[in-house]
Length: 574
Ligand SMILES: O=P(O)(O)OC[C@H]1O[C@H](O)[C@H](O)[C@@H](O)[C@@H]1O
Image (cartoon, rainbow, N blue to C red; front, side, top):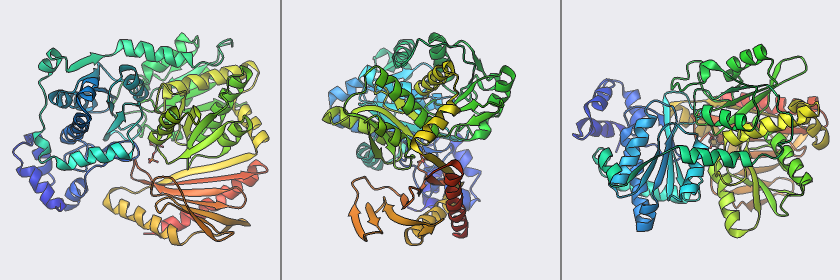
């Protein structure tokens, strides 16, 4: 069915409400807008469903929420009565309509005879992951668009092990979605009835308390001076209460919160794009940091699964750490502390993605810890935790990605901005006692393992036009690429979509074991590499460039050269 037909079907559907129809009528002469909203259906990407809010099949709205939830209910019902009884736990963030969507999902489940546990208010995404395991539910849902701009919302789905669903369950859900005839006809149970029937239970404090205790138990060193000055911003999101509580209960009392970004604000008025990967979002934190002479600035994204930080240098300026650097510092800190206590399991493993840098891996190796790589997405990283728990092959210690996601231990099976914030504060305080900042520690790491440089950037290309152009860029790169850069030769090309790795030195080709994904990686004979992939959460093509040099300038020079070339080429592909 083409997009105009789909549009007309919504307009003429008697089950679609007037407000939605009025919104659609306003665009009746705007073919482009109709196409954007109806040319495709939202599908499960890197982290569930995500899209702009509005009427349409390619938009997040109440009908799409009902549709996805009904499909999940069908999959759970197919698992049997026990699964229905185990139920589904639902959390939501501060975005427009998140609470309404979350309640809607709960009542759709209740109508299917599936018990829904609904958090009483906003909660961090990682707490939901914990709640799935703690309550022993069959599944979990978080209504959030994580770090996307304010006009987005999303729907993350978790399965019984507490991690986000992988392609197997996503395919079953999609199959059930396709069987739904009219998404506007999906029924919900009345809220009072659901409460009376025990099919809706509101949860909160007990889970909060237990989650906070578990986070605090991850502390590696408590006998340290805790007078470090911290500026914290939750980006008007869900981190405000748990992060402050953990720090406070751990005895870190010099925590100053950015006032303008403390309370929920679905418009993220003083931040704009609430992604702490973007240094611009630290503007208010830096200002407060200077006022208070803080040692460390920390930010979480609105659903508090990401964490980024900036460190005060000797001149009093704040220097950002990227995800690879923070990951390396945390791995170094965790392994050093565990080693001292003789607590590194003999088969310990850290897990990172194919586009995460190699520094963490080198550090792990020096402690005898193995590294496993997965495709992008914390569902894949924590999927390994589930797998290793069953096979016993490894003991999962730490998972991380360059996109500022980290988790230590396995009681949370997603990236956790609360755990990450606590650990980075603890590490900074510990090294401060030794008169070192985290910047000094990073320098020590570089001196020991070699200087790593990197540049991660993306080109935003929105809408259908953007999606098609990204497709052309990827196709072009499969055929035409740099074979030499700054004297270094291309040695390997990995095409993750065709699951092939080509070795250019001995002209051989091998199949790779990972699942298919649209990504390309190019490796050179001087330890530098770059990768390109379309984002699965935002309308972007993402480029990751890494190099290792004898010193900072050598490493940076290689990255600069690759970047120039890649940018030139991408801009030339129209
Ligand atoms: O690069 P993308 O597909 O946009 O994904 C970027 C990130 O999105 C979410 O935060 C996922 O949980 C991460 O695992 C992923 O790295």
